[in-house]
Length: 225
Image 1 (cartoon, helix red, strand yellow):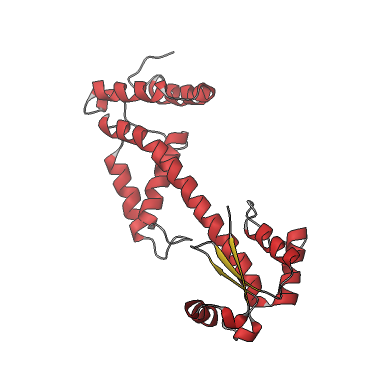
Image 2 (cartoon, rainbow, N blue to C red):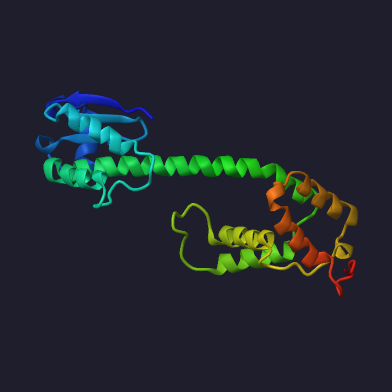
């Protein structure tokens, strides 16, 4: 991650940046020390700021971990120094940029995970390995929930459906129907076969125990042990 550093005197700041500084940081130009254009990865710095401090700003802003404000760490103590030396606006510019990059990183990781799962989801849909009634009930319950999710990226109806799938997949929520009750028994077993072909072998003991409990115990129409 690289940040373009632009060292300026306050009166040399481009007019559009002056407006952003005054509107976002709510300071006068005479109090300007640091402003960051997050999407452009540009940092405008007052020429009076020592080079060693600029290097530290960049180190903090590009730190790969989540927390830079912990008072018990070197970074947290330096952020206190930033606040005391350059003011609240500079302090926020650093922490806001770091938070912005952390959020973008999480979004990218989530996108990659979702894309890797889509082929398996499509196979399950083709094999009809989902209970529409359960999904609908979970979706409806989430739709009835008031408020919004922490990041307000998706609705609670989506969250409820996701959590339902997690519970079913983990074995915490036991399925009641048997293969014989599936609309298409061939597709049902085909779906299971496709899933097992791509499963991590280390997961097999847990999955075997789950399947055995679902389908191979007495009283469920399966093969009794």
